[in-house]
Image (tube, rainbow, N blue to C red):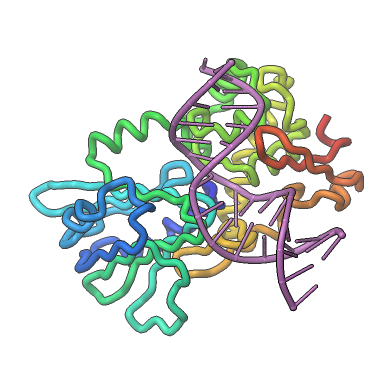
Length: 277
DNA sequence: CGTGCCCCCTGTCAGC
DNA sequence: TGCTGACAGGGGGCAC
């Protein structure tokens, strides 16, 4: 689920409640979600303070300080159905149905990792391990480093279908199946076009449309199809704004041609056969 | 290095 | 009503 816009929305919703707070308790209910051994996670997080909450690609990164400049970084990948929820002390809403890890903070509020399918992963990394992991991911598509020139250069090195290219986190970080399909529609590119065969002008357009669709989805607090929720448990509102994703059998907004669903690389792609040659 | 396939897991929905 | 199969936003591992 969560792609870059969803991760960004969650991060924004966690900053205020988390930064400056100290962890008073850690409960691991599903240890299969952890890369780090459960006892180590408890030992290193208990008593530590959240110093920063950020995002890298589709991952959430929670920085912690255990004092005497001992730093850790909790990297959360939400998989398909993960949620990272903050529940204030006076919270009246029903408790999550599939909690995996629960942190109690020093103000009595709770941070809960919730995941029905349990494809998500939580990894508490050292600063060195974080740097190494960081280097393995591609550029942030909304950063200045993601220039059109670099994008064109990288596209030209690959024979993979352009949709597959967009999903590869080593090429560009944070794009998933929804926004890959949306950006390709906006740029008028068929998802199966080999990356290096995308015409230059279309590729330039793809660079622009990728950035614009991600920003638009962030403004809408992400796409809730089923599982995704913000840190406060709210749904995102971008689902109703999708142009092709999930719209097979419905008319294209631009030309009225029926949107098609095809499958390659083990995943659905949605396209307008007329607009996306 | 790229590709195609399988797997991880649970829930929902369409069709019979 | 109940069963079965397809499918779901991600990612890692494997053989080739």
